Image (cartoon, rainbow, N blue to C red):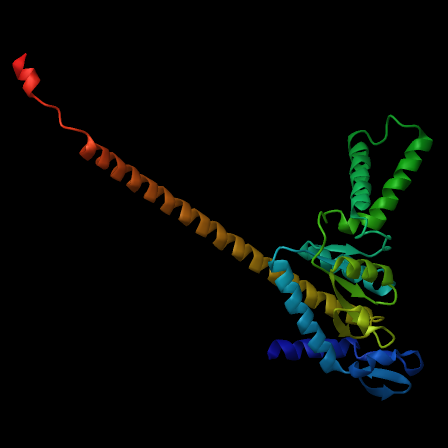
Length: 278
C-alpha cells in the first residue's frame, strides 16, 4: 500500500491528471475523465493508477517470458526521458522518428544497422583515411543519419513482446504496425487520444515531461523485475537439467553393472573334466 501511495503522490505532483482543453477532447476518453476545471479536463487518477499497474504486470510477465520491450516517444518532452531511463534496463527505444516499416519490414532495418556497423568499423580502423574528402563527408552524413534514427534499436534482433507509446496521436504509424503484427501496445494517452488504439491504456498528461518521467520510470522498474524473474527461471532450469543429467548417469552406471552381472550368470561354467583327462 505504501508503494501505491507513493506512486499516486508522484503522479499528482507531476501533473499527470491535467488533460487537454475541453474543446479538444475525444469523447471516447469519457470513462477516464473525472471532471473539468477552468476549461481543462481533469483525468481520473484512479484510472491512471489502474492502467499503470496493469501495464507493469504485463511488462514484467512479457520480459520474464524472454521477450523485450520497445519504447516509442518522438515528441520533445519524451525524448530525453527515454534516452535516460530505457538504456539502464537495456531495452529498445525510438526517439527521433519512427521509420515506416520498422516492424513490418524489419529485414531492411537490420540491413541498415549492418551498414552502420560497417561505417563505424571504417571510422575506427582508418578514420576514412583512404577516402576523398567528398566521399568522407557523404559517408559521415550517412552514418550520422542511421545512428540518429536507429541507434536505440540496434540490439533489437527479434520482434518485441510489446511497445510502449507516448502520445498515440503522434505515433500512429508505430501503433498500426504493432497491431498488424499482433504486438501489444501500452499507451500513455491524453484526453484528445483514442483509447481504442491501445491494448493497455494509461490515461494521463502526455505533454508533461515530469509525468512522462514517472510513467517510464515505473515501467522500467517492471522491466527490471521481469529480467530478475527471467534469470531465476534460467538458473532453476539449468539446475534441474544438471540434476537430471547426474541422475541419468547414475542410472546408466547401475544398469551397466546389472548387465555385467547378468552376463556372468548366463555364461556357462567351464568343465574341468577334459582338463583332467589330458
